[in-house]
Image (cartoon, rainbow, N blue to C red; front, side, top):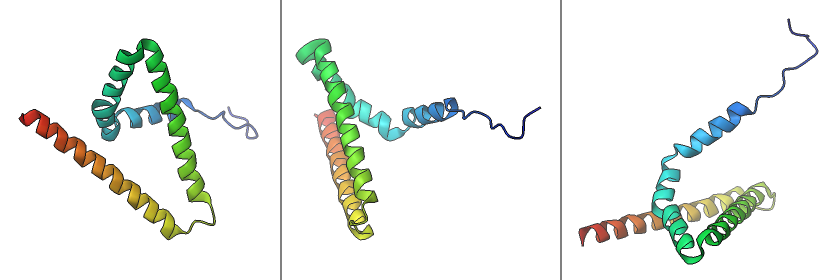
Length: 113
């Protein structure tokens, strides 16, 4: 029997598994690792072996935190209007689309040679 005054402890295991599954099976995540991540790891390893991979990892994590902090800060500032924030997100989406299209066209061009 449960005590009415005692709550069950929070279960974080399912949240971690859910987050990992969403990341691992996200097609953009997989495409990034195939198209960008793997060549970066190979290049880092060829340049400096394990030290290169460590530098790549530290840089990648630092840039992720910096980027996410910037976006969260911009989104939470009362000084930034919703239209300005939406415009920033549209500009970033266009930049990502440009890089994606460029990657696809370069891949097709390379395959056709």
